[in-house]
Image 1 (cartoon, chains in turn cyan, brown):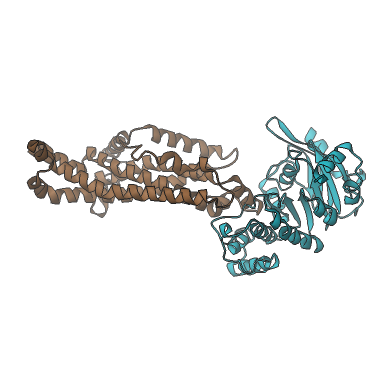
Image 2 (image 1 turned 120 degrees about the horizontal axis):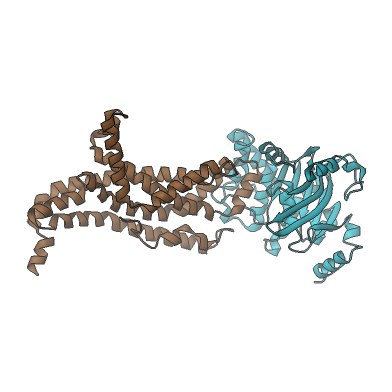
Length: 272
Length: 268
């Protein structure tokens, strides 16, 4: 069966040269092999291989519709892949997804969305403490204390009791980052988190992400911010047509791309 | 002209019938409030059951959908009469203890309780559809955010989706409540002396509609302010949404827009 083959292939992963292999052979926290995902007849991911080392930042760039966001949704099983394997801290996830696997992934992987998706009926501090209480079973005071320190850390110590509709986009996105961090994830996924922001608000969000990266958080960042990718990423993956076309250190992929498609894309993005 | 006026506004008859009409209207109010509250609860339960996810969830989902379709597809009067017949049969055959088959709880007559049940069965289904529209109008990103934080389907419904849906559905639920209130008059068919029945009794003995007219006025005293309140709530919601509160600007999916147009849409 195809499933079995994929499973076997996943276990043999270290012997094959993968994108990402070589940064630190033993430190792969996340490893994707042959990940496929379709929505109806539309094939969005057509076999993605990717390895993410612990404590590194991987930026995923590429044109709209190339499957970048879907890749993140596959990783945290919001959209489980149909084919291929996803290993997270040594556990295979993509096969026969069960409730336990969902818990396993979502305790370890946090995600921040383009549209923030804050809970509009709750203040900032309640946004950050809800899942701590309901999922991790923390007491209200414990959860609020943690939420307060996280909001302080993202520079929103004065907005604890403010509701999302009274916050700017940049502030909302920082609350969303704090909300994800409150679950103490091992990996953070960022899905074009600055794309919906006014230009002057982008920096405050990127600054928070830079700090996180500096503290050693493992991050997979789908982004159009090429400067961020250049400065912060340890690895850059260029996606097009549902596959990773080019992969390597930012200096190579962004500074001296080999693939025609990468060159063309960067030409369009960096032109202005 | 005087005869017409006399037919509807004979103050002598109104004064005479007043105590009975008030007593009847008090039944209408009690029945409306009780059945209204029970329908709100039953409707929410149905709406949540209808959202049960997964393949196994179909075992719950399909019967719920079937129930809602059947209840929405039948006239309220038929449901009242069927419930009445059902309990009559149960009482005769002794399957249920007589205190349950012919309930006289809290000093209310048995048609009151049959009516409460029948209206709840029916309006629970209507309200389930309103809740569903509200649940579906919550942006899918909310579910994704809740699930990605590790919340279960039930937790994300309870703490994230339903609280937001409730705000969106208050106007259409109020609309359903107005319709429910008018439909309580159908319980007269199984012998409840509510306001319309009182008016009819007078009409049949005195050949005069003034008592009915009095009942109509009492109804309007309650329903017109409710309709005004409804309009106010819808206008407020529209203002709030056009101001652009975040990312949920799907005005097209707003349930208050779709069903608030016709007060009394479900009226029997």
